[in-house]
Image (cartoon, rainbow, N blue to C red; front, side, top):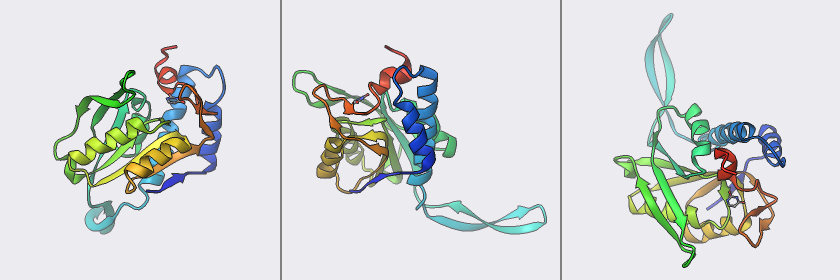
Length: 208
Ligand code: URA
């Protein structure tokens, strides 16, 4: 598994803006989608291409198209929804497989309460989106269920990653690449990433 911190100036700038205390729901939401689009650009830069010919304005012309596996985007509910439109802005034809994972507060284990996968997901490249990779529990559970459904190629895009979450994914799924806008310092006692963004779900949905 590798983790790629994408240090593009636009991403550095936008993730910086997201850290401001008191940021509005509108601004937070817009920045999450914009960074998601920029991460998508990076996470798709090795997709294979094939040539084909079409009728151009001056006659036949050779062009290229993306070949190989089709893509399914996998938002982890609910905060992953906050990155979905950004990904779709670059891959508008992608199908969406929603996954809901919650933590059982007694066992502290992640459990799946929603698994709405697209048909033939085993033939697709799965791109998971979740703004915060904190403990890694939800991400590992989502990768587990995608692999159980037959997915062979899985990538993940997160806005901010904690070293603890990166390690958890790396230990459980060394074949999955994570693309992130920032690797932050650590998790605090409440499981928040420091410096992080605070509660990304609340900030995206305005539930605070
Ligand atoms: N989930 C969040 O929304 N923020 C964190 O810092 C950790 C988990």
